Picture 1: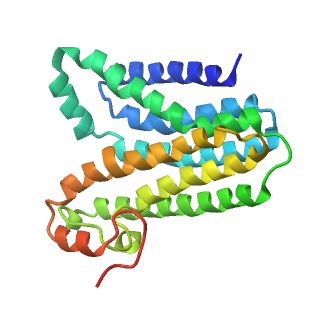
Picture 2: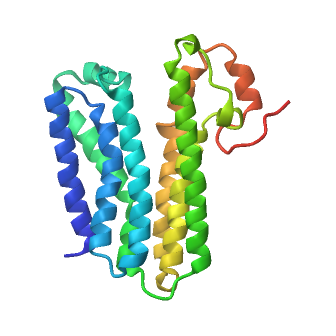
Length: 261
């Protein structure tokens, strides 16, 4: 059976498990934990069925490291805490249609997003034949490492800041957050652009229109972070905090850069 269909089937099954788990726990925040696991699942399936195990193994390793860190962080953040305010709001707004809308708008829609973003992983497994572009593969790995460090360090700084009761109602403006208002999102975006470069390097002699499809992945996640559920949602809350206008004026929104004087 086609790897694209196999991946879709297992991901659909996986998201249904996530939905059932949310009903049992009465908490849709669990969707955030299952998010990273969806990518890990597809990377493992792709590696297992890959036409070239060595290059797919490297990509699987990168995805598993990224996804595992994300799962652990969100689990620790949500442990023994009530349902996230976003999901709680939807629970109240959707009323009697809550289960159906949760299934379609949270879990199935999330599964579709995961699948689209994971397309480069599947393409690499299908088309990675010798020879490769070592330059592009190396650039992809270097970019991934930089993105992973940005995301990991920024999240650590944020978690440490939030845990301190003295910082309640304040803005985090130090560390990486001095150079970007959302350094963790920059790292996330860079990770998926780097994966796209890695994959293009792995199938450079089998490209055609595939390269365009591969770029849909980082474009989608970057657009989502910049325009949809990432920056707009967080900055709507942040602008209520003291010092926001000054911080926004002098600090880059996304790509890290030196603060304006």
